[in-house]
Amino acid sequence: MNRTGKFAAIVALFGAVFALPGQAHAVLGGTIFANGGPVTVEILPNDAGFISELFLFPPAEDPAKFIALNTSTGVVIPVGTYAAGTELIFGIVVHDTSIDPDPTYKTGPASRNPDGIIHADVTVIDATTALVGFEDLAASNPSIDFDYNDTVFRFVGVSAPDGVVPEPGSLALMGLGIAGFAARRRRKSAAKV
Image (cartoon, rainbow, N blue to C red):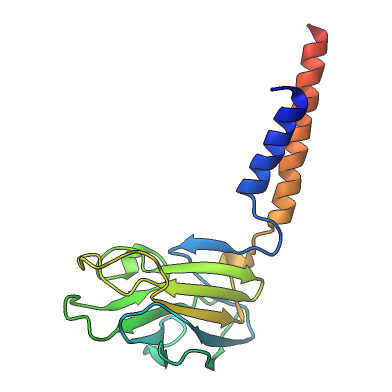
C-alpha cells in the first residue's frame, strides 16, 4: 500500500473509531448527573414484556420517588430540580417477573443491582440530554437478552459524569493531526536513509 493509501486508511480508521459530530455516546453502566436546572423525563417506545415503574433513588431523593410507568409512552414528566453535580440514580421496579426475586434495577455499576450485572445503558445525546435503556430481567432469567431496550427514557436537564460531553469532532481532528505528524516523520526518516 502506498503512502496515500496508508493515510486514507488511517483517516478511515479515525472516522470509524470517533463518531461524527451529532452522534451519541453510549455507556453500559453509565451514570448521569443533575446540571442544576429542572429535570424532565419522557417515556419512549420500548420492547418491554413487563410493566415497570421508574423511580429516582437516593441521594437525589430519600425515600425513592416514583416517577412513571413505562406504559405511558410519549408522556413528559417533571422530575424536579437538583444541585448541579448530584448523581441521579434512576431505576425500574419490574412487575410480573415471578422468576426474579428482587426486580429493582438501577443506572450505574453492576454492584447497585441485586443480580450483580449492569441493567442500564446511558447514551449521552448532548450537554443536557441522555437516553437510558434498561434490561428488565435478572441474570438468572433464561429469557434475558441484554438488549437494553426493554424500557427506555429520555432525560433532559442532565449531564454526563463531571459535565463531560464527548466532542467526537475534536477527537477526530486530533487523530488526523497525529496521523499527519506520523506520516511526516516517516517521510523525514525515509529521506535520511
